[in-house]
Image 1 (cartoon, one colour):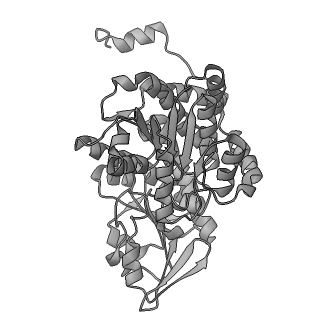
Image 2: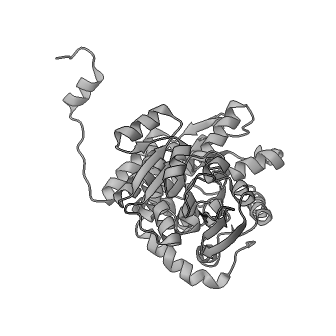
Image 3: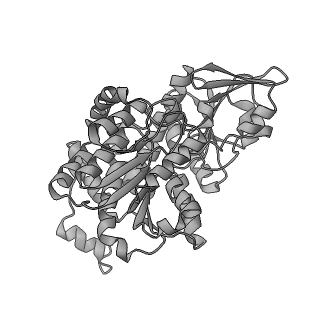
Length: 418
């Protein structure tokens, strides 16, 4: 088996952590049990570019249980857990191409190694597999039945490709499933982002002025969790509806420049480029801390910050100090990459349980439906979304009511009024 990992000797530690995560992934466990019996993925090859974490490991194990051949690479140079990669290779026979801290050249060589397995289905977190296929391996793209995309940033890129008419195969936007973005994006990102910031800095959030850039599902989670820890939270938005929602939720809302001059900790979760840039750095207070929880490391203009600094040095794990000419210091966390994965362990397993259940069921769906799909971006079928919610509730021991026949008739009629 071909693979490229940091240290095979870490496999046993990785196995224990994978097992620990599996305890909190009951929905994926139920799917795995069915897959083991039915083998619905027999004959399929799946190429995945995801964060190599304990939760992802359980997804790979589930796909293999269903009969699929899988290969995995990292979707971010700093998100790989090397012990998990080692365990997947040694204990589960999964070809993994991922090393924490890999450089850009190695990162893309790993993507191409996964594509060399000629997958029928691509599974992305950020669309790097798909974009590499479209840029460098267009002929191979014709062999792909469909893809699945895990994150908001990737869905944005793929919808742009579909609208431009250049998307070469159908893609399912797993990110848009209700059981994904309402929970993973909000509760997962909210908790794991603050976890990463606190592990990197050990600062007290109570009383600290925190600016959250972006009030989508991820931003809402970060803002609410920061407030829960006592932070004084300001939201920066460009969308008037989201800004209004943030105001109605009780957050202060202001412009990016005003926030830059008044806040202490800055967290970007927009999916856009250069959200924090030179004009913001020029007015920040001494000791300002910058963190990004958007997918790519472009939300903070790091080259501009470096250019205007006298020096740059590492002062803690995942903390770099930039000294400005006037003596002010600005601290950048995790090289501007996903702070929740670079400085912590990413989302808790219980929330990734639903996200990866979506991935597993979408692969099964693609096997039967790919011949009928157009080259566009699809939402997850509603029946899959609801089935995952049902399984999650059952695993939590929660029961809900069903509509009576009378209630169903009332909701489907127009004749019955007051």
